[in-house]
Image 1 (tube, rainbow, N blue to C red):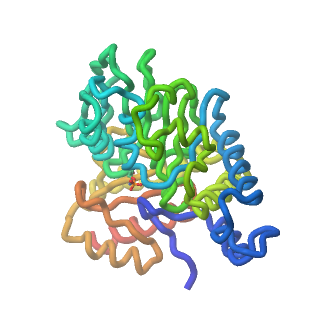
Image 2 (image 1 turned 90 degrees about the vertical axis):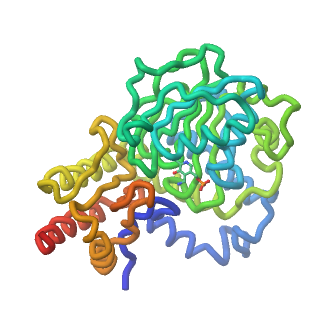
Length: 361
Ligand code: PMP
């Protein structure tokens, strides 16, 4: 049996050449005569690899000077707490734009540390759109504005960094980082869990404007303090060494594929193909999201009769199309088509969907 096309939302598919390289050097990494998992994070070989990974990420995303990149242990959820701890005082307001479950969770967690406000929210419409920028009620004294640039569950994506004036914009990019070029200078802080477009779980990348690091001064325990991690080049304590190494391989793979412009073109083609199949199915399949905000990474869709869901999942799995079950909050199916999903995978899914509709019409 060969590898299937894996549509998991995360941990998600990784590029096959990356896995093969990791496999080939698992026991003896470089000149080390030991696995990358078995060497000190303060050793020369690891530090050189770590620095190269950061350089490659900076090149891919065009991260300007004046921004620090942190490779940290943990998950993206941890930063729902850590961002307010570091960037705001307890009495300060923080503005949230709610576009789905992940921004909603970040909003709820921030209440432990600051005064979160909903500046705009699409919750009443069931998170099917991004509230028009003109309707956002931003507070001038907010410490920052929080968005989730891609809502992994609801399939709603921002395609531009919204203009929030002088207040720093914080983006949870867990599920669309590296999927297209972005202008990092529009953001104060970006964080992303690795397990979709970066590498294995256990690693979080934080990209933060240097001046914002001063805000935590003396208030935050060292392990939660972005400034302390920046001072120690992310080696304040033991980082997730294997995940960092694998992320480095993913960055090399992305560069070899032509960088983020090439990735964006491929991601656009994949998403267009899948949405066209859904919209062209005469109502057999449906996606409820405003076409202007439809995610190119996570495509939720329902079947016209939910009684067919179990059969769809069983048959798709047998056809080598994995993990299409939708999130329990929205039901139906979800196809996550991150960078590592080849166009042939989406072609296979679309062919399967057409055939399924014919057979179960
Ligand atoms: N934010 C977004 C947009 C996500 O998709 C996820 C995970 N699916 C998280 C945050 C939480 O990530 P973690 O499980 O690493 O805490």
